[in-house]
Image 1 (tube, rainbow, N blue to C red):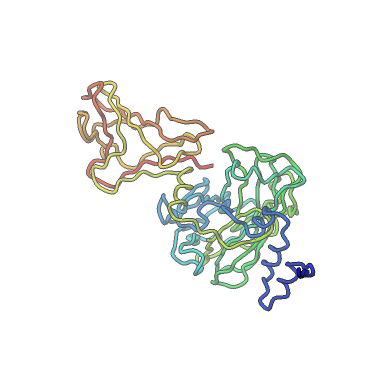
Image 2: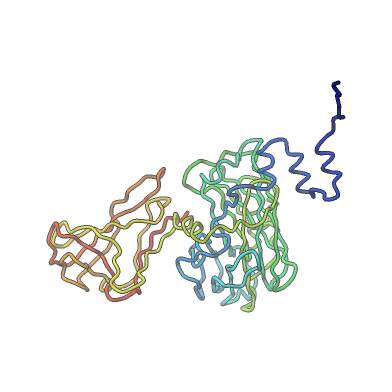
Length: 405
C-alpha cells in the first residue's frame, strides 16, 4: 500500500523571522536583498575605501614638521594628506603623526598643533585646510553626471579641544562642481566618530577615467567670510563663495588648540561600515604610486647602477617599488659631496657637479616603473665603464620622487 504525505507550503523568510534568535536589522535587510549586488552594497564587501592612508600609518617624508605656514600647498607628514593656508598674516602650525588614536580602530593619527596663533580673528580672505585627492580613475565609476550617480558616505574619527561646527567640502574637478557638509565636535579632548552622507551628483559632466584629479575632499580648520556666504549644501558649479559654508570654528585662535584625524573612509552608498584597515604593506604600496623616498639604511649604500658615456657624464637607473602615477618630480637631499661612484672610476667623493632626472619608462596608462638620472662630474670617467651611484659614508641623504595630484 502506498501512503502519500503532503506538507503545506511555507515561506522560509517568514519562518526565520519567527525564530527566538532573530537575524537582527542588518540580517533582515540581507534576507530581503533581491540580488548579490544588493547584498554587497549593504555590507560594502570587497575593497571599499577610496581614501589612501586613512589610518595615518604611512609617513615616508617624516613624522613631524614645526612652525610651518603652508602658504604653498604641501604634504608634510602622513602620505597623501595635503595642507594649505592662504592669506594668513602670521599663523603657523606643527604637524605630526602621533600614536594617540581611537582604540580598536587605528594606532596612529594626524595632529595639527597651533604654533603661532591667528589671534586677531579670521579675516575675510583667510583659509586653512587639510585635504586628500582621489585619483579620477578610482572614482570615475561613481556615475556622476547621470541620474543613477552613486551616493558617498564619509566617516572619520576626530578629536580637538576646539568644539563647534566644522565644514567639509567635496570638489569634483572634471565637472568643476562642489558640495559642502558640516560636522560638530561636541566634547573637548575626546575621540568622536563622524558620518557624513553625500548624494551623488546627477548633473554636470562625468568624472574622466584618467590619472588626474577626481574628487578632492577638504577638512576646514578656519575660513573667512569670503568663503561662507553661499549656501552650497547641494551639488553646484564651483564658486569660492560657498566652499566653507557652515564653518563656525577658528581652530587657529590659540597656541593651545589642536585637531586630530584618523580612520578616514570614503565609500560608495549610504551605509557607513567599519573602517577598512588594510595591511601596512598594502597601504605603503598605494602611497608609493604618488610619492617614493629612497633613503639609505647604511653608509655607502647604492641608489642605482648604470654606466658612463663620457669622461664627465654617467647615468644610473632608479627602480620604483610600484609604477608611479606620472613621471615624478625628482629632488635629492644632501650635498653633492655626499654622493660618489662606487665602482666605475670617477674621481671619487666630492667630484659630482649635478644630479638630474632624464628619461623615464612607461606611460600614463601603465604608470612609470623606473627612470634614469644623469650625473655630471668634473672629469676622470671612462666611457663604457660601469657606474654605481651611492651615498658616501653617510645615511643622511635621500632621493624623492613626487607624483602627487
